[in-house]
Length: 69
Image 1 (cartoon, rainbow, N blue to C red):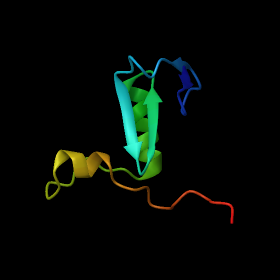
Image 2 (image 1 turned 120 degrees about the vertical axis):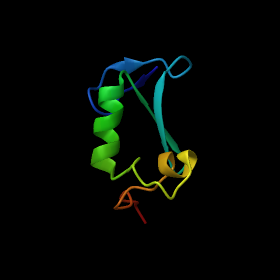
Image 3 (image 1 turned 30 degrees about the vertical axis):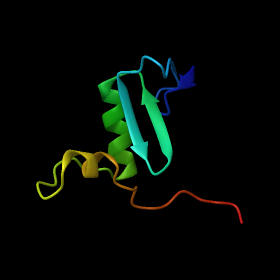
Image 4 (image 1 turned 180 degrees about the horizontal axis):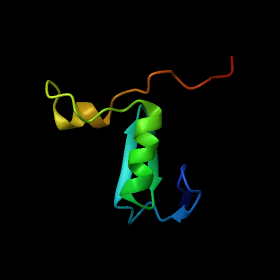
């Protein structure tokens, strides 16, 4: 079980219907509403007609996550 990063609800990653891949990370969601909220906050856009569906989903967020050095 993993936690939905938006609402913190527990989600079974083996049966999750809603997920987003960013880089090497996969985020699982309890609903489409939580997934859309997360993608909007992360800068993921699905309305670019020039890109294929998988390029839209795998787009990096606007600002990279902080990494310790």
